[in-house]
Image 1 (cartoon, rainbow, N blue to C red):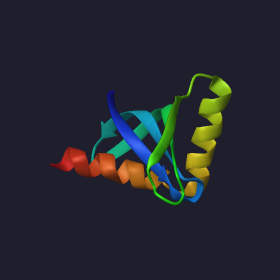
Image 2 (image 1 turned 30 degrees about the vertical axis):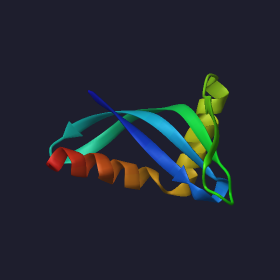
Image 3 (image 1 turned 90 degrees about the horizontal axis):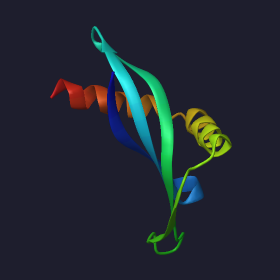
Image 4 (image 1 turned 180 degrees about the vertical axis):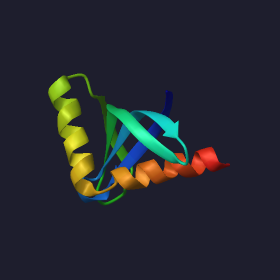
Amino acid sequence: MNTVSANWEDEENNRQVAFSVAFSQQENAVEIRSMTPQKVTFFCPETKNPVRTIGVWTDKGRELLKDQLHQSGHLTQIQEQIDASLAV
């Protein structure tokens, strides 16, 4: 199993969520085994500059962020990015 870092740009909520992604490669496809949110960076809506960064320390917080990522539809994008990086 391999691990990479990935970011989810949640522009609607002016934040970026950093994940650790554990995956395996089977034949020509990448299978995501687990995702662990590591930190959240919040941005000023006007200037787009980072305001603060917080760590994700609780299981409830990790589950909430994973659920939000799944609902956003960006999980497929992260999987494609991993797939593309392995093809190089």
